[in-house]
Each structure stands twice: as C-alpha cells, then as structure tokens.
Length: 396
Image (cartoon, rainbow, N blue to C red; front, side, top):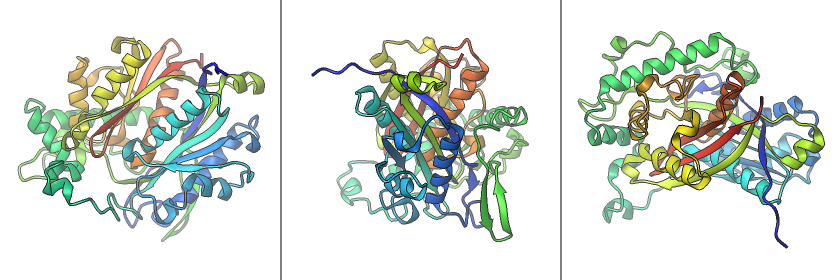
C-alpha cells in the first residue's frame, strides 16, 4: 500500500556550551554520554506536550565511537536519560556532519511514515577523544595513491584550498575570521543564545561549576593580532588557529516531528524540512564539500540559490567559506545571508555535534526574521564530503 509523504518539522533544538578541548576546559572531567543525557532531558522538559513514550527513536552521532562515546550511544543515552525501555536508539558517524546526518535520518523516517517523533543530535568530546584517535587508515590509501596523504590532516586540506585558489589569501581568511567573531559577539551580547545553550553543572579541578558559556569566542580578535600566530600545518602557510575552528567538547540535539503529531499535540514548530543531500569531493580538498552538496540539495528540491534567505555554513576553516562565497557569487564575507550570528570559528566545532548547532542557529535566525522563507545548513566533512539540508521558516 502506497504511503503519503508526511511533512516533517523541527520542534526544538538546544545544546550544551562548547568547551575547549584541553585539561582546563570546562568539560574536561565530564563524560560525553552525560552531555547527551543533559540535552535529551532538556528537550523533554522544554516540550512537556511530548511524553517520553511517544519518542520513536533516539539517533546520536559521534566521530569517535568508543569509550564514553561508544556502546551504541543512541540506545545507551536513552536508557541513561530515563526514557521508557520501549524507546530504541542507534549511532551514526559522518564525521563533521554526524548530527546533520542523524537529523536527516530522522527526517526520512518521519517523511516515510515510519516514525512520528524522533530525538536526534551529536556529541564530540575532543579532549577525551582527539581527532583520529584509535583510527587505523588502510595503508592502501597512500600506497596505491587512492588519496593524497594530506587528506588525513584537516589543516593540510585547508592549505590545499589556498593552493587551489591562490587569490583567496591568508589576509582574506583572517578578515573573514574576525568578522565571524564580531557577529558572534553581537549575537551573544543580544542574548540570542540564552534559550539555545542549556546550563550544565560539571565537576572540574576547581570543584563544581556551571557550564553555560562557550569558551571558544575571541571577541577581541583582530587581523593585526593574527599576524604572529603559529602556522602549524606548513612552513609559510596560511592556516592558523585564528582562521580555523577550535578543538571543542559539546553536544547538540533536537526534536523532529511529523505534521500529524504537530496537529495532534498542538506543537509549535520552528522549521519545516524541505530536503537534503550529500556529495563527495577529493579528500584532500574536503572543504569544498558544501558546494556540490548545496547544489544537489537545491536541485532535489527545485529551488535556486537566490531562494535562500540565510545560509548556515560550518566554518571549519575560513578558506573553505571563501571558496563557498565565490562559488555562489555571494556578496563577499559581509553578505548578510551568511552565518548571521557568527560561525564555528567563533563558537567552536565539536565535530559530530556541529550540525545541531547550525540547525539551532538557523531556527533562531528565522525567529528574528519572520519574513524569511528558506535557509540551508551545510558542512564540509572529513575525507571529502559535504552535507546540506534546506529548511522552510514556519515559526511566524
């Protein structure tokens, strides 16, 4: 029997603060799965119309799926959060697009009528689990020249983009980074994230503290101040800590629901899912991934780039954002559609959790701009991929 495709909505999205991944970072002594539990419980507390037993699945992403990010995190966190044993769960891994993939999986399940309410998100504890820890890349990748060796180092892939686009200079990347920091500061000062970042009490070397602010933002950053920063990826390079996202710890999550449940429970959705796409690029220039992914998502949904009122582009590195701006003939780094509240260079990039941050930020931007209609959340992904999801503003 044929099934009708259901409308799918974002009901709510929230996240922990993003901490710095180092011994004195706010989450250094906190388990990754406990951050996930905090987000799940916060989502349910904020949406009392949704009873825990109504949740059809609990989908969570992590790039390093072992230790406190392993044990099929989706199922483990459902149990730890006190959800009924009837609520299943599973884990996904698409590196930086992990949470975005978890959300898109939820969208597909609900659109096909296989579920009505799903919690989806991502977590990354990069202090406990440094990028690539435990990985054992097959030697054939390099021995048979399947990929360039630089593909295994994200910073080097950013340097490769500068090589590929020599007119996208370090100075331009630094200017982009400073602008991101300034936008983030303005948004933080305005209190736009007060209902997105959920406070979490954590144990630290100095005793109990409340983690309620991102540790990454550097609001006083200047182009002049970046000139003396170390160039860790290449002698005479152009990529440094100031024009890159940080190494961070944090969790993000959201509730996705069908139109049927929105009507039945009287929910107030923020956005409607329009469509999504993934695309591959050469691993050594993984930062280009959002470009074909955006084009593919637009093609799949019948929209044009100019139909997008806002673009939430993850800022793994400033240079990949510059390439995106050029590819779509945007109005430079000051284009008001792009990362209106700042991006990952300011807030941080806890790998698999970043897609949830993009979704939460786009929902907030729609709230602040009720006449906006469409927006996109898009990320580059390690080992040469891109992900993009298009959303419609319905929270008017």
